[in-house]
Length: 251
Image (cartoon, rainbow, N blue to C red; front, side):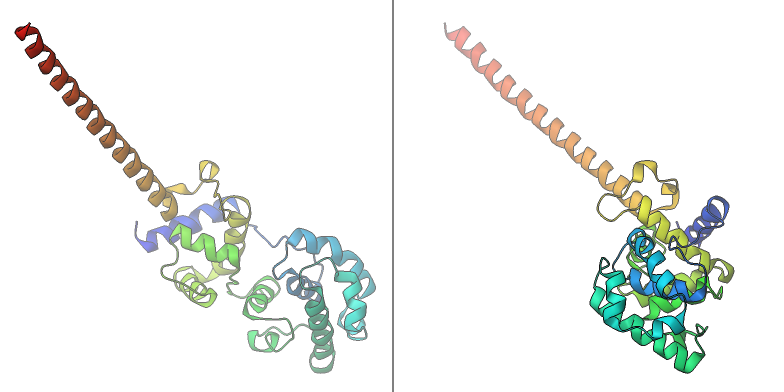
């Protein structure tokens, strides 16, 4: 299957079956999404959704958060991964928002990446979800699933994956495709043991195709070995039979 055809099949399936796919992080405004995404780095959305209600109740906007110390913020996020660093990021991020952006979330990738704790992936999430920009955030799920499906080739970095996906995806689908890939990777195309037996898109999946080919080759090899073993056993049986006949003649 050509890459173009694979992309067409990908967009066609998910446009029909998951047209309204969205982030599983809970938020009610751009500030809350930015905070949640910063906290979600190397942590599950489920865990983040457990701790953000109290955090947002105490610090409902950038102004409130900017008045808090990293130690105070830490008490609300201690159960997430790398809480010390993230507390410092949130404290620094909120101060910059207040001082330079009047407490509002900037819409450009360049401005977002100036904020502590905000890398390219986080900036892409915010611009695509909040501002509906054609941005492709690449996390471990997107990286893995895009490669397995055959949407990317020889892409060894998140940026390379991002560029290849954006090159082939229709612009209006890019912000949705991010969620399609994440959710598929989170629930079906999991890292260690992908659930190919229940996957609805194996018909255009390169990984599945390769696995089927590998399985077929393995079966063919096993069958060949079985036949060789049977042939060897028949040869031994024939030799034994010939030897017995010679012995009977001598008798």
